[in-house]
Amino acid sequence: SSRDTAIPVAMSSSFAALLVVYGTFLAFCGTVGAWLHDWDKKAMHSMYAGLGGFASMLVCGLLSATNAKIPVAIGVHVALILIVVFNVVFFIQSYKSMGDKAKFDRLVLFLIMGAGSALALVRAIGMKPKSKQKS
Image (cartoon, rainbow, N blue to C red; front, side, top):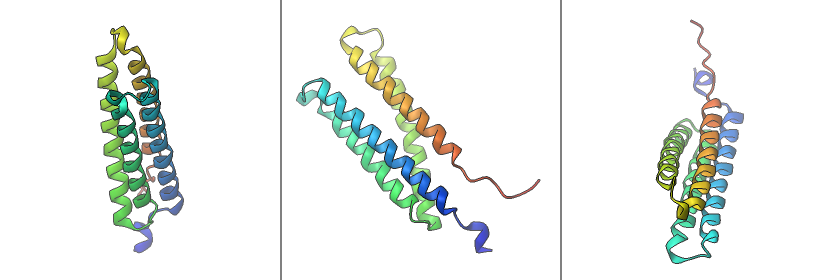
């Protein structure tokens, strides 16, 4: 029946809120990265990437908040894939920055962004609706 396939409205709204908060975190961290380098043209990619992360999470959040099965599925799954990709990127960038005193500020920023991304992933996975089937 349609009740079995209905998406819980509270879960959908909560997931969308998580994505907006996570996107805001990415935008903030990216902007801080550019600010730490006095808005130097070479460092502006940090802010652009953060704002891009925010935009992608906002779009996924809006899809997730529709409460319509297909847009919610698209928003949730694309968001999960992106969060995993961001985790991998921040881990790799942290690793590349280790041991180089000139990149210590980048290391700290990537570790913070990685920790925030890991937390977002754990929270997002934790929001998965529980199966109603009994074995």
